[in-house]
Length: 232
Image (cartoon, rainbow, N blue to C red; front, side):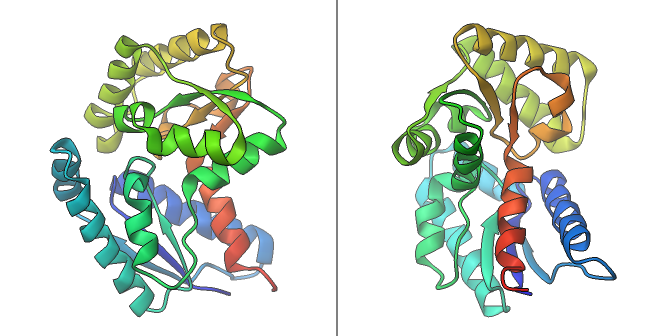
């Protein structure tokens, strides 16, 4: 089995979910006492968050590229970045290593296409919803039409992520607000919704909705487990 390298800590709540889901899926597929060989570099989120808020993506790229190189040096055979937003610097990370880097957008886009959808709503941090690195990749690589919430709804989605979910707070009132926002995306033509922040699976589950839900954390996990156990 290949060793999985995880750049995490953004936030540690979702990184813990990655660790749990990866090991559960390996155990489900391989049985017995199998678990995943993992090396983890968990960053201080405050440092990365400050870089992002200041718009210093170059510094964030250097910081995470260094983490990636360290994971490769520690024996990782495949690499994942356990966050959506900071995939803004995915090119910097990929350039720093010689091992495969599994992009979260590619795992998501592949699943959407497999479900034969064309128009999807996107929820995430304001950076994920507003900058082109995420929507652009979905459009250019997968031909998808990506709808984001209105400015006011984007602000609320972002606020719930940073003031609640990254601190492990899951509020029923915020869940209802998200469901209302998703309803508005559906009215605009969304056939499914992307949970484009690795914490959003804490708040929204597929059973909450009548349309397809693409949880990027779960899809990313499935892609890395596919790679880790390939050939076994």
